[in-house]
Amino acid sequence: MTLKEEISCLLDTCWAGREIVYEERTGSTNDRAGELARRGALEGTLVIADAQDAGRGRRGRIWISPPGAGLFMSVILRPDTEPSRISMVTLAAAMAVREGIRKASGLETLIKWPNDIVAHGKKICGILTEMHMEKGAAAYVVTGIGVNVNAETFPAALSERASSVYLETGRKVSRAEIAAAVCGELEDVYEIFRRTWDLSELRDQYNNWLVSRGRRVRVLASKGSWEGEAEGIDRMGRLLVRRTDGKLERVVSGEVSVRGVYGYV
Ligand code: BTN
Image (tube, rainbow, N blue to C red; front, side, top):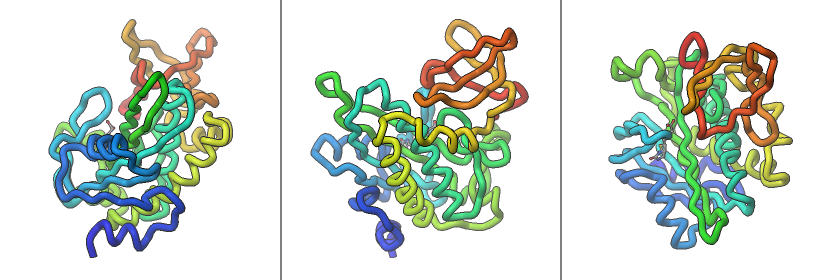
């Protein structure tokens, strides 16, 4: 069976992943999903590739995407809300991926705000959500998900901070199972999100999974860095960080980067 057939057989959703576009190789599944969205592809369309030649990460980084071991997928969403709320899609997606990985592999992970998935302090998944505007509104959103599924090694420069589901569980896991489970969770989480277009109904669960909750973090902003204790997210997905002088700051994703004081998380 092909990866696409396997995912189709496992899917138990109404709209997420009901249309699947599979590419053996593509530049970036986010770009491919964007092209399809512009041509009218349905909400929930899943684009998945065995390998990417130009996989992208956040902040202009490269997402190394060789064939075989990784899951490279993007889902088209059509949120009917203001552009300022779209950054929350990515936090909702992180919750879906966290649960999808757990259901498919048994691996318990946490979320590094806003949307990295970490296991035992190492990143196993990244999410890149891109919004496309038309006439001041979000025409469509592409949520791209890259999971290190069965990678056995990482380059020396990455191995301190990156891992895979295989390295953390000792078991090879089917990419199709993770993809199908993530689609199922994404459908559930997104339907909760779109009831209010904020995270008021998801925030408590997100905070339970937040790796830095109650820990000291360093906030790296363009005007310099500062430290405080992370308390959780608010209903708009901002990270609440208590400064040493007691002042509570609301940190907006995209504007800053947050690190653990003692390491990556
Ligand atoms: C990050 O942590 O920097 C985000 C990484 C997102 C990678 C995925 S892989 C599938 C999709 N296509 C891309 O080009 N990027 C995302």
